[in-house]
Image 1 (cartoon, rainbow, N blue to C red):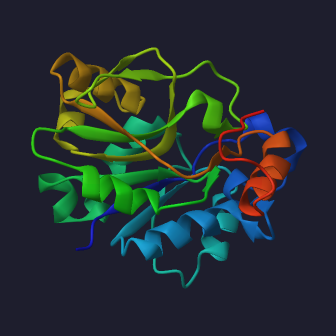
Image 2: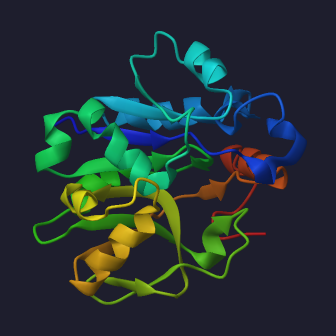
Length: 235
């Protein structure tokens, strides 16, 4: 079956320094292809439809690059809405399925090896979940500098703080977005409400994942894609 997908591509990319002075971060090349194109490969492999990409910094460049790719654009040029506000603003573009069933979201600043993360989420989704986050162990989070994001119990329920890193791929229900009054907010606020209800879950991705949020992440991601970096090594 097809499922709606939101690709987050509106960030300023400030951690990339000079690399994003003249282009948006999703257009930074990794292994000869723009980051956004790596994300679209996953979307096509999972038969995601519709696919919505949000825009902010250097929006016209990203529109031009994606012309003919069959994606819809949620333009945040006037105001950056963060992940929660951005997803809520994009719901009309994501179609009726996004209002009554789970949808996918994917960050555009990462690369993967192994199983398609979107298909993994789809196969692991079950009744009673409000969000299912795709995670990797801290030791396998290539290019990631944090200590970890979540702990996970035997049933897959998540709590804050722990050895697992959120990869930027998830499947979630969108109904709870309407209860948050602010126009600009992070999806963390929605997750906190889901966690309190015991409806926030996670699943581990068995392949490789590299965070390409900083300049040094580019070489690490290219090494991962080339098979030159062990999947359990996270500098």
